[in-house]
Length: 431
Image 1 (cartoon, rainbow, N blue to C red):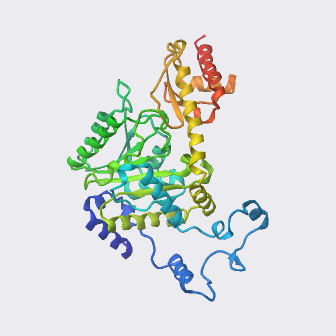
Image 2 (spheres, rainbow, N blue to C red):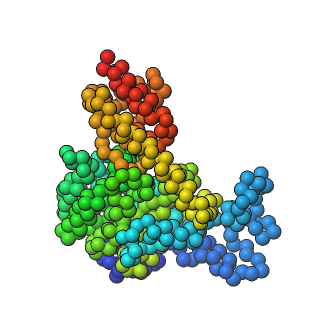
Image 3 (cartoon, rainbow, N blue to C red):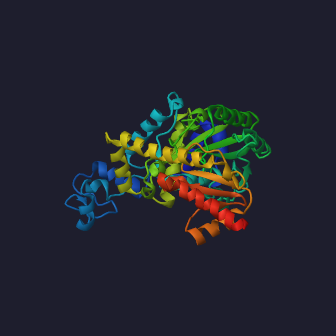
């Protein structure tokens, strides 16, 4: 094992032996090189005042070389903030601004110790880093039956984790904390589990209420007290899009440092929060009371980034940072929030029509981009295919009964027509 990896492991083990036990084989072996091209370039940047012949970019007149046909379109920004490589951890100022944003939006974080967010290539990359660092073959990865299909690829196919599902909802259509509890406590023999919490949930658009949130915290704590090392990942992709009574902050804050056997990790980003899907800017943040442990996890995360994408895109980080610092940012974001909330509320008012009762019911939704219909009379795949072929309407079939509808991409004025066409499609199939 590399000496640097060994030192990081020692720091983690000293800080919290349970977190060391959570690491995968790759997680223990990975490190960020202290000696090499990046470190030597950094030293040269700081001290080589005459000529710096270390960095792998082209310069001209002391600034990054660039094409006028590109720079003319991006003239609001300096070439140094666009064309050179971003640091592997991301632009330092962006990391600081995002951390401050997290503190403002999550009051429960105020007195907690957590790392500076590290920039990822959006949220999938953040989840992939978690999988690499903490999932060994056969490790239990627990998340609800209503889930984003990429979890299976990220944790199951890539890392050969054992993906374990539990029903998201109880019969009363509240979060199934007992299902989570049973799935977690079943891992006592293994002594380890990775739990993924995704709120607002994709595909249902559901966020638990405050009481349900406390139940989740209690379940995680119970598992830790039962001797299970729990890596808890909050996938906060749709964070802040909370339209009704629900939790209004990430569970990351309350999970942070609740027990020595619990490692809380927050995956979030500008991707959906700031409506910049193609910019691919996300963040990964760790919680711990031990600063040396946080520093070691950061170095291992940078090792994964260096070994995979090297660093994230610089222009999009610059654009996001500029937006977050703008005095107009909050007002413009609130405008978009109200549009999304209006769409969600309109969908609910439409679905209250009694004529729909015989063909579907819908899962609770109060946040995010989506909602899910539970079909009663036809299969979801048959309906999906029929809708797209006859009416030019696209939806997502999930399993036999569930049809996901993204109200996020349908203007409010067209929502009534959309659901009428879905209803008509069911009638067609029944006939």
